[in-house]
Image 1 (tube, rainbow, N blue to C red):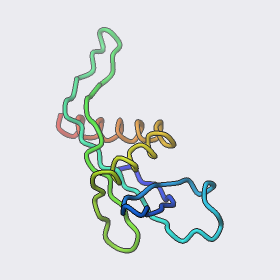
Image 2: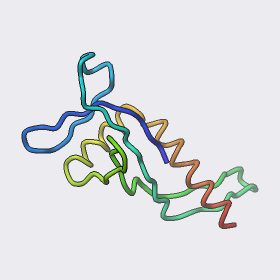
Image 3: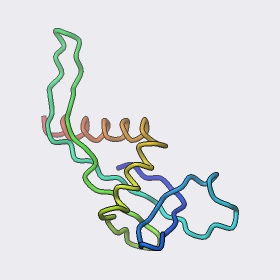
Length: 110
């Protein structure tokens, strides 16, 4: 699971938009932790004879927002906004975390 602390703003339509700390002022009061749950859907075994490592297919299954206490799953536009924010600012870290999840699932099942 990947998680990151971020600022957010709830728009007049009720949807959430997410920001990096440096994008908001010092007095900003709306902060949360975004937690990303991955769902690998297919695994491809390593092929040592051609030098290929383990590979997989999959995507983000759920994005949770934790403010105080238990997290809640984001839905609809807020989920899309969180996904776009995370991919834009944390794409490499997301990929690495997803890759680690897939490898762990593959090798534990083997």
